[in-house]
Length: 229
Image (cartoon, rainbow, N blue to C red; front, side):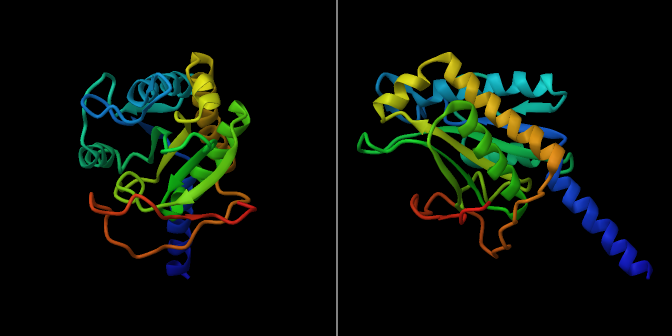
């Protein structure tokens, strides 16, 4: 009986840890010598930092603790970002990495959120849906992909691709500070909803035994969740 009670207690703590983050590690993608995508007069590293700062402000207004991976235009290696995030592994933290998309053509559009860990499923779904609602950008969906910033951190982690710089219409929209504020508002709203509702109504993906992601991993691939999540 004691063992059953202990198991239930541990299970409850685990679910609450995944569903109610006490701290958000905000990662502004790229930086320094790594500019990220460049298209239609926009530079990804500049947009990610601006959006990250806006997200920090909004989360603090919600009384949610935050820590920024970078606060200026500096280069930080992906593995160093993972190590930084792991410093908060015992503080009920989640990682949100902010990026903007780019492809060789100009037709691709919409926003997408990547994740890997089962305990990050609800975080990815809620953030993706809220950003789509706040911005009006096409909701491409959530995609389970083994990336260094989704697989390797010891905390639940997501990577938000908030629109295509190579799409002229989206680039025009993303060039506005109001657009980036809407993205930040959507991410913050998703995190707040996660704290309020947890994983209710969202199925976790199953655990997959896999090695840590590395530089040589292919960039393409992944599996989108079926409709309903």
